[in-house]
Image 1 (tube, protein in one colour):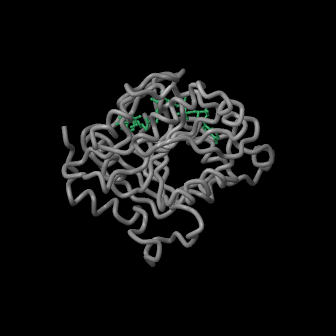
Image 2 (tube, rainbow, N blue to C red):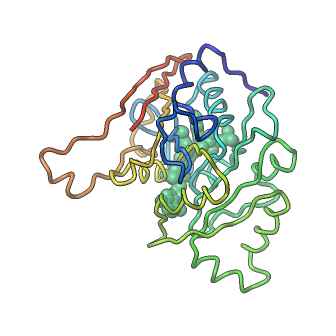
Amino acid sequence: MALSFPAGLAAQIAPYLPPASSSSPSSGHEDASRPFVTLTFATSLDASLALAPGVQTHLSGPLSKAMTHHLRAHHSAILVGVSTAVADDPGLNCRLEGADLARQPLPIVLDPHARWEVSENSRVVQTAKNGKGRAPIILTARDVVAKNDIHDDSSILQRQRLLEQYGGGYITVPARDGRFRWEDVLAALQRLGVRSVMVEGGGRVINSLLEEEQQGLVDAVVVTIAPTWLGQGGVVVSPQRTTTATATAGFVPPRLRDVTWVPMGEDVVVCGRL
Ligand SMILES: NC(=O)c1ccc[n+]([C@@H]2O[C@H](COP(=O)([O-])OP(=O)(O)OC[C@H]3O[C@@H](n4cnc5c(N)ncnc54)[C@H](O)[C@@H]3O)[C@@H](O)[C@H]2O)c1
Ligand SMILES: Nc1nc(=O)c(N)c(NC[C@H](O)[C@H](O)[C@H](O)COP(=O)(O)O)[nH]1
């Protein structure tokens, strides 16, 4: 069913959206060499994204869910980690009333080891096939693809061919110990023509972007807080402190600035900048 997001709420979120064009003076995003980055997710009162790894948990109420789709309509890409793609089988499209293909964001999946067995049955592929969204681009570690693409029958190549039919595919990014540097991820997106990306999760993706040395890459933060406790054992947002920071008495924890709290039904959405 198509979602709708009230104009009054949209006006309160507007200052945190990426600029319509990179030359907009209101953006606060001076660096045209990389895309505008919005970090956004829904959390419980105990900072959980899901009841357990691999379990999809609906936290957002109808209004904050519509807000997420409003954000999707204003970004050129949506990024998730492979465990979210596997757990949720997401559509990764904008399902707002009147959203047309021209305004659909490009789904990006961080999958260094090419673990996601994306197929014709995956919801994101079905969505692209039905003209309701775009096929995903999967970012894979350079050495993983190098090992596989010499075999014509390798499953990565089959998946690549499937995705290419709909305009998606794999691209490779340098990795160290199976991890990409966010600068390299953003540079790859920039080369694809992505001007703005919303990073939706899951836990490992969010925590890695909130590590001290990566925070400078985040332009806006939009977090939905739902009035529930998921309990221990969930997927928790709690970034690693660096060794020096932990050992230093004067450690100043990261804090949002330019903060706006927007009640949305039973949830509250907190917007800010890092
Ligand atoms: N509430 C929400 O807003 C929300 C949003 C997204 C996902 N989720 C939930 O979160 C759970 C998944 O979260 P998770 O933490 O298990 O996994 P995840 O979705 O963060 O994916 C983790 C994987 O992504 C890749 N990855 C992450 N950062 C990387 C980096 N810097 N470089 C290279 N690869 C990187 C790695 O392969 C890693 O194993 C699911 O249960 C899903 O339903 C909730
Ligand atoms: N805003 C938000 N509220 C939630 O309660 C929840 N579980 C997610 N999860 C984020 C995740 O990135 C995607 O929303 C899902 O993977 C589903 O994506 P689709 O709707 O199928 O496109 N996001």
